[in-house]
Structures are given as structure tokens and as C-alpha cells.
Image (cartoon, rainbow, N blue to C red; front, top):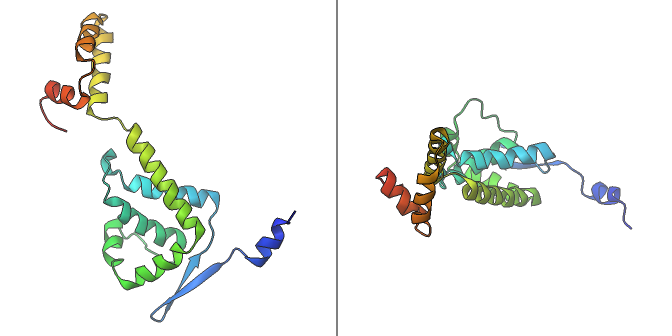
Amino acid sequence: MININKLTDKYPLSHSKVKIGKTIVQIKNFLSVDEFSEAVNMVIDGCFPNDKYVPEFKDVATRYMVLTTFTDIDLGDMPIEEVFKVSQSDWYNIIENKVAELPIYHEIINAVNDGLEYKIRTQKNSFDYLCDTLSDFAFRMGDTSVFEKLATRLEGLDDKKVAEAIIGKEW
């Protein structure tokens, strides 16, 4: 059996550097469990402004995560929108390529994809909210028989079409 110290001595947990013009940027080659979790959640949360999934924000949030998690670049109070704008340049590509060489980067991206899939799948939609409202209403009335009859009639119909018919608009 191989002792783990032999591997970590051979491949120490350290930082690497990239040179961008005359500036040296340090790249963190490893993350703690907390940093890993923060990086994953930063991207997932960035895809849901106002609790609605916006797929194009994944790239925006990923850029921000790469710069804040893996580099020693101080972004100060720069809003994420501004970071996205200024990072559309070769200097960011150099950093991203170096970070993409790290196994932990791919683990973050896999965890982000899994997290997004789960959050999208379990996120309530208009139909869910409608059902909650009707259930609450029936509970307050104390009579659910009308809703049970309605549920029987609606069984097998497309949820979206039912919700659109009741609330009178498309999603």
C-alpha cells in the first residue's frame, strides 16, 4: 500500500502563476471543501436571479467564480456584470485555460451541472403555485369535494394547458 504522503510530497499543494503582459497572476491549484462548495453555489445561484433560471448567466457566473476562487485578482466592489464585460479579453482566456487544467475545476463544473439539473427539476412552477393556492383555499373553506371533482376531471391533461386555462396566460 502506498502512503498518501509520498503522493502529496511529489505533487505539493501549491499555487501556479501565469504572466499576463508584465503582471503575474497567482492561480490556486487546490481548494478546501468550503471553497469548493462556495464555488459551486456561486455559479448555481448566479443562474437564478429573482428565482428564475437564466441559462446564459451560467457563463457569466463561471467567469466570476474563476476569478474570485482561483486567482489573487482583487475585484473590489465591481459588479458581476462589469466583471463579465472586462473579462471578455485575452487575459481572461489565459487564466481560464490554466484553471481548466486543474482537476478540481472539472469537478466544480460537474457539480454545477448536477446542481442546476436538480434545482431546475425541483423548482416550483406556476402550476405548482396554483395547486398550493387551491389547496389552501379548500382547507380554509373546509370542503375539498369540489376540488376533488375538479382534480378527477383534469386528470391526464397537460399541466401547462390547465394552468394557462385557469390563469388565462401563457408561462
